[in-house]
Image (cartoon, rainbow, N blue to C red):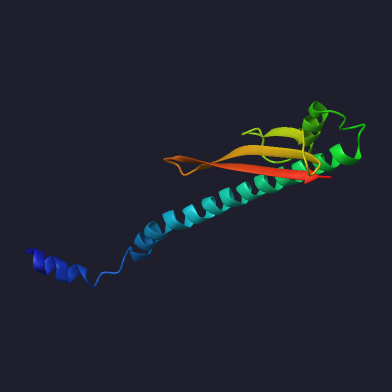
Length: 128
C-alpha cells in the first residue's frame, strides 16, 4: 500500500479528534486556572500587608499603650498581617515629618513550574 492511498483513506477518519483537541487545550486551561489562583493569592498578600501597615501606623499614633515603642508596633503589625506566612513579611517603624511611619516588605514567589519569579511587595503608611 502506498503512502498516498493511506493518506487519502485517513483524511475521512474522524475518530479520536475530540481526544486530540482536548490534549491541545488542556495545558492552556490548567495554566490559566493555576495562574489565576497565584494572581489572587498575590493580591491577597498585598492587601493583607497594606491592612497590617495601616492598622499599626494608626495604633502608633492613637494608642500609646499598645504601640508604645518600635518593638511593640512591629509586633502589632505582625499580628495584624493575615496573609501567607511562607515568605514572612518584615516590618519597620519610624517617626518622620508626616508622623508615625510603618513599612512592610514581603517577597511573593510566583512558581511557573520550571522557574520561580519573585515579586517584591513594599508598602508604607504614615499616620499623623
